Amino acid sequence: MAENQLTEDQKAGVKTIGTRVGSGSRTSLALFVVQAGWILASMDYSVYNFALPLIIQDLKISLPTAGLIFFLSLQGTFIGSLVIPLLADYFGRKRAMMVNILLYALTTGAVAFTPSIAFLTIARFLVNFGVGGEQPVGASYISEEWNSRTRGRAMGFMQSGYAIGALLASILLATVGSRFGWRPLFVIGIIPALLVVGIRSWLPESRKWTASQEQKSQAVTEQAQEQGGFKLGQLFAPDLRKTTIIGTVLLIAGNIAGGGVFAWAPTFLKLSRGMDIASVGWYGIVLSLGQFVGYNAFGFIADHLGRRITMAIYFGLGILSVIAFGLVTNLVLLVCATFFVGFTLAGIFSGFIIYLAELFPTRARATGMGWCMGIGLFFWALVPYILGLLATGSNLGTLFAISTPVACLIGMVTLFFAPETKGLELQ
Image 1 (cartoon, rainbow, N blue to C red):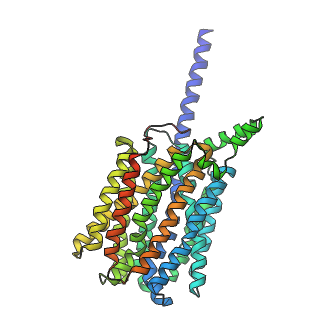
Image 2: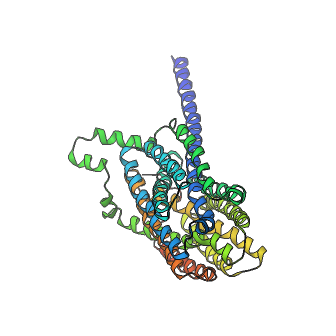
Image 3: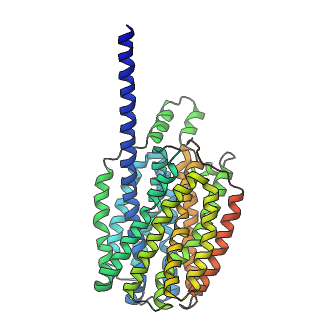
C-alpha cells in the first residue's frame, strides 16, 4: 500500500512539474506574441513622426497645421485607450487584441492614399485608436500571466517592442522613404500586422481574467454580480480613487515630458540642424536603440531597487538629456543626447505599465490602465499642438528644454505620495 501511495505521489509530482514547464512555455510564448503586436503598433505610429518632414513638404502643411493634425489625430489614442481596455475587461484580453491589431493595420494602409489634410487626420485618428488600446490590454495580459519576482523585466521586455517598431520605422525612412517618398512606408506597415493577427488567434485567454469571469458566473447575489462587472466610474470609488489619481498624474507628466520631443524631433533636426531626410532616419535608429536599452533596463533595475525609485531616476536623467538634446549643436554630443532621450523619456513607460498593472486589481486592471494612459495621451497630443503654435523651426530645441523638465519635476513630486509595489502578488 505504501509503495502504491509513493507511486501516486510521484505521479502527482511529475504532473506538477509538467504543469509548471507547460506554464513557463505558455507565458514565454505569450510574451513574444504580445510584444510582436506592440512592435507593429509602434512601427505604424512612429513612421508618421519620422516621415512628417516629407508629408509637410508634399501636402504643403505649415507647422501650426501639422501640430493641429497631431492633436486631432492623437485623440484616437486617448479614446482608444479608454474604450478598448474597457471591452477587454468585459470580453477578454485576447479578443480585444485581435480586433485591435486588425484595425490599426488596415487604417495604416489607408494613410498611403491620403489625398488631403482632412483624410490624413481621419486615417491617423483610426490608426491611433488602435495603437492606444494595444499597450494597456497587452500589458494587462502579460502582468496576469507572469510571476511577481520577475514581472518587471518581462513587462520591460514587452515595452521594448516599441523601440523595435520605432527602429523599423527609422530604417524604412532611411532606405525606402529617402528614395521613394513617404506613401510606400504606410503600405509596408499593413503586411506584418496581418500576420500577427493570425498568430494571436492561437493565444490562450488570460488565466486571471478567465478565473474572474468564472467567479462572476457563480455569483448568486446582486452584490456579487455587481462586483463581477466593472464600470469606468468605479475607478473613483473610495478604494481606487488614490490609485487612479496617482496613476493619472504620473502618465500626464510622462506624456508631457516626451510628447513634444518625440513628435517634433525629426522636424527639428531637419529645420534647425540642417539634416537631410536620410540622416533624420539614422537619428531615429539611435533614438530607437536608446529606447530599447531604456525599456529593458528599467525592468531589471525596478526588480532590484523598486518601482518608485527607478521612475524617479529616469525622470531626473530625462531632464538632463532633453536639455542637452535641445541646446547642443556638436554632432557627437547630439547623438549621445538622442540616445539618452530615448533611454529615459521612452524607457520610463516600462515603469508606468509595470506600476499600473500592480496598482489595479484584476477586475479593473485593463480599464484602470487604459484610463491613466488615455488621459496621459491627451496631453501627448496637446503638447505637439502647443509647440507647433509656438515654434518657428529654430526655437523648437528651446521649447523642448523648457516643457520636459517641468513635466519631469511634476512626476518626481507625485512619486513621493505613491506606494511601492515591488514583489506584490496581483489581486
